[in-house]
Amino acid sequence: MLMNKIALLITIIGALNWGSIGLFSFDIVAWIGGGQTSVFARIVYIVVALAGLWCISLLFHRDERVVSSAH
Image (cartoon, rainbow, N blue to C red):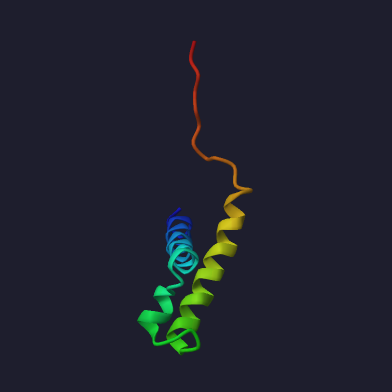
């Protein structure tokens, strides 16, 4: 499903941003958006959080691919 892939991509981008904060004390979103409290940065943080919430649901989805084992 396309929405799952988009949410996963946004979550990965958010994780990379958190990694840069942890490793280098550098917030890429804040740097691009003009600070952590800028409207742009806050929107990005909210979108990443919503994508993370969406990805929680992926933990409970059954795999729709059918694996056949013909003997």
